[in-house]
Image 1 (cartoon, rainbow, N blue to C red):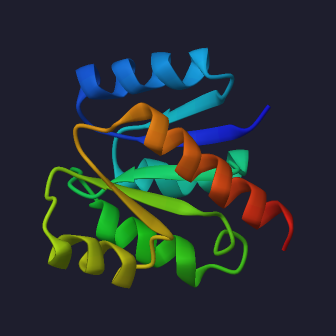
Image 2 (image 1 turned 135 degrees about the horizontal axis):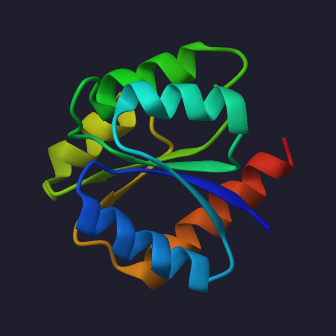
Length: 125
């Protein structure tokens, strides 16, 4: 079973997405800010991180930068989640170090395809 770290500060969004991912067969870990995401990534080694970019304490931009700079976590794929859907927003998410980007509200079938593509790719490296 693939382990996903869902980093989302909005309780309703986090719970809804967690339930939907569990129904798709994923083990879902949760974090509510970037600092907690870094701690859980180091301790639980998820197969993939779904990172909201707008977070309290430490935002997703900073958390992604730190995770990608750490040799112990840099190979874990990160999909940036943001409510901003402009082309420049996607570029900004990718430049921060995310492997991919999904706009909110998340379209589950597309997100699952993205998760599978990145976890399969990471497992071959």
